[in-house]
Structures are given as structure tokens and as C-alpha cells.
Image (cartoon, rainbow, N blue to C red):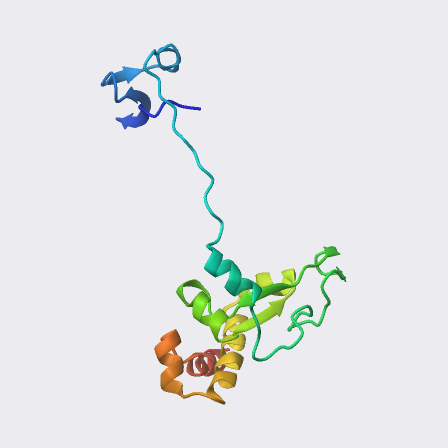
Amino acid sequence: MYCKNLLKKMKKGHYYLYCKLLKEEITFDKCHGCQFKEYKRYEPMKRHSSKQLKMEKMRFSILYKNLSICAECGIKNGSFDDRIGMFTHIDKNEVFEGSYRETSIKNGMIVPLCSYCHKKFHNNKNFNLKYKNLFENEFLKEKSIEEFISLFKKDYIYLYEKASKND
């Protein structure tokens, strides 16, 4: 543990320790023997708010009824996956990530993916757009395109068609 007055600074490309209390450059030994040493208090951060935890427990999908089977490859939760050489876990992944995560959960835009497909979902743009396109089409069966764009700010059907033409 370090004193809360101890800082690591840089001068001409070299690091040194500085004490805010003594207002001078010091060594670890001088800090260790200091009578005015004050330790920082560390408190564990909350992982999720209670509202977010409740939403995540209540997740549902407008396309997939069974969220324990991978939507892409059909592997079941806990099955052995030869592609990665281990037992797999099915993740309930929000199709629209980032700042649209909560909106995605509220509207049932959840896709169950095994760990292999989940990695592919985040690393392959066309694979990602495929699912965004599927969920947008399902959303449009009940609501308007204007409502979708007001929620998610983009028309993924257009983006998917554009990406498909380039391939």
C-alpha cells in the first residue's frame, strides 16, 4: 500500500517519486519512514446497479425462445465444443451494444451465442450486421422504421445490404 501523498512524476524522460506533503522529490525509504504517512482507502466497486441486474435477469428474445442453445451453430449450454476444445457456455448477448445495450434489453434484442460465436460476433463486422439486420426486420413487423432509427440511430438493413454488395 502506498501513502496518498506519494506521486510518480516524470522529468526529462525519467520517473521519480514526489511527496505532496513534504513538497520534494523522495525515495521509497524516506516515504516508508515518514511519520505523516496516510494510506488510501480502497472500496470495491459495484459491478452492476440493482436496476441493471434486474433487467439482465428478465432478458428475453423476440426471435429466439430457447436462450440455452447457440443461435448460430446450435450447440447446447454445457456441451463440448470441438472448435475450441472445451465445454462451452451460452452467453445472452445484446445485439446492439454500447450505449444501446439497455434499449436492446428492453426490446428483446438478445441473441444466445456460444463462446466461439460470441467472439465471432464482436470481431466480424458482417456477422454482427447479420444479427442486427435480423432483429431490425423483426422489430419492423410491429413498429415503424422511424421508431427503430430514433432508438438505435441507424438503419442496419441498409448497412447490411451495402456490406453484402462489397463482399
